[in-house]
Length: 188
Image 1 (cartoon, rainbow, N blue to C red):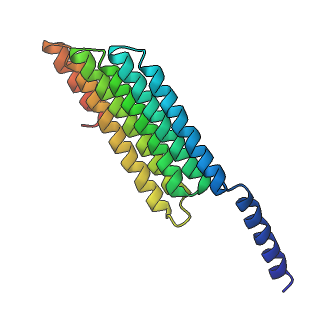
Image 2 (cartoon, one colour):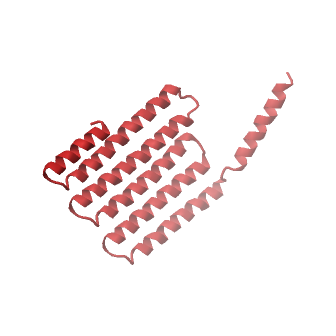
Image 3 (cartoon, rainbow, N blue to C red):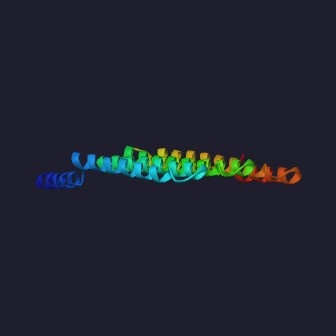
């Protein structure tokens, strides 16, 4: 019976420590204002640029703002849902910037660039999903195995599409050989 009062004391202390790290409403509001001010400042700096460099800068500013907001949400409530949202925000921001950078290219190089960006986006999202399942205390080992399998399948499919797009730059037998090798390598 002595264990229960001790366990209660430990749980209470842990709760008090965790709540001490939570943001107060004033701190949350100040952080939100800081994020907004940084975004506006970054957008102002982009105005000096031209053409696609301006677009890339703008996407970087938007991405930084979204990631900062997701980090703030995670600080306010450190749970699996917010951890996943943070990982997704990072992946989406990286993808948007990579897509915008591809606009500097033309033809098949642009298509390959976009497929590579999409592949990296899919990999990051799948890694976030696997992490979400692995941190879920209610998840069964079969759930984690299924999440890993799904991630592997989707990543392999994205990699195949990128390699196949690279093959399009070739012609004749070289192109056929490239596509055949890609199908064999990625199990298509």
